[in-house]
Length: 201
Image (cartoon, rainbow, N blue to C red):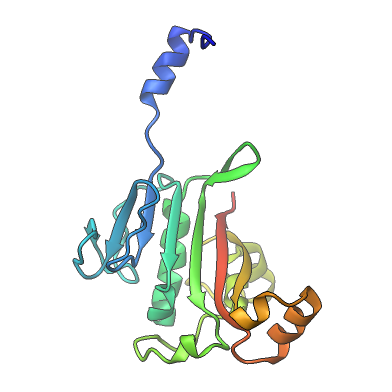
């Protein structure tokens, strides 16, 4: 079947479109391979494209230019002030959110950390105190801070956050009521917290 011809304006627009800018922060030796990701780390491992102290230095991307950020098992290595810097810089460089076919395609980050009640959070002595908990995510929203934490002036970000969990294998197959009870009361029920941080405009 023949494709419909595109107008000169449509062709020009298609030629000007750049591929999405996706950044894998704290990638170490395991930069994502499912697309064109820019690997960022403080150490020049194989696959690291940009060497950067993510928690202290200004990130080298212009305001509102990054489509997507991925940070897996990285944020827990930052001290509190560096986590705030991370959130502020993330907000600065992210594009405004956009959707395609009902799916969020830009303006967001996926942040994966060990769950605070898992030994994964405190077994690695390079992890910083405190462990990353879900309550931290509220502080990333400017409106929430204005009401509940107006003294936190170091935050400049405005992000909405949703999260879920990677659960212990023995709990994954159980029913939802069992899982919720386990998350509330049992150490090791959740292995990781998986959060989506979306820029608010």
